[in-house]
Length: 350
Image (cartoon, rainbow, N blue to C red):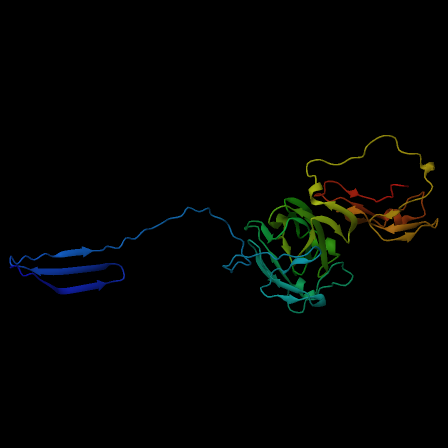
């Protein structure tokens, strides 16, 4: 007769944060008293996976922010940004409009006008509240050019308005400060002199530009020229849409029609005989408003143009015309313009 007795003498389980070890010991007693011991050891395995990635530069909403910035989506005609350059606090401007604190710049220093400084904004087209012109961002000749890179959500046409005022007490005459402004790679302002353009110190002046944007940002570069430091007091950015159809022109120019490699010219051929005309469809007073000439003809306010800027020379007095006003104003292309284009609508049945 064989008697077999099975006795479990112990079971111990030990667990740590990294390794789990289980030991099972079984003693079997028989007539031959044989002991069998089995040990099972479980070892944890750590797997490290390294992913391959591409380094991407992320725009931040300010120099101190650590969070990526998502540009706002706006409807055509709405502001994307109003930036109070040179100030770390927002301000409330005309009609309750909020100007955000300075952002999207790469370098520069800030300047604040002396207490009690007054800036004239009256009769200045597109001028903002006086407080905007009391601070500014500038860069010195030892720094790289100051660039504002304004992130946008949509490609299309944009209007950029740059606000300036000469409030530095050491700059008081024409020629002391001059610099260039480059927008989206095109030089918009050359040898720009704030005092000359504004008509004196402590006077606001606003420059407006309409540009196509085909990537994710609008880049505005303030480039050194040789006299004093480039600077700016405020920046506005307005989205116009994928077709140019706004208050400065009554024509529509799809973004896809933009031709940056060639200029457009007329079809050539002989001009029609003026005596064949029975009426004037449009009389446009380029660069100025509507008026009646000495012959009683009504001239319309400047319209149907794309880009360009107004020019004025009150000294012009043609000897063969009594309507000096017509010739003392005009519109001329800026350096960035492909050409100066008027697209004047006519009725095909005429």
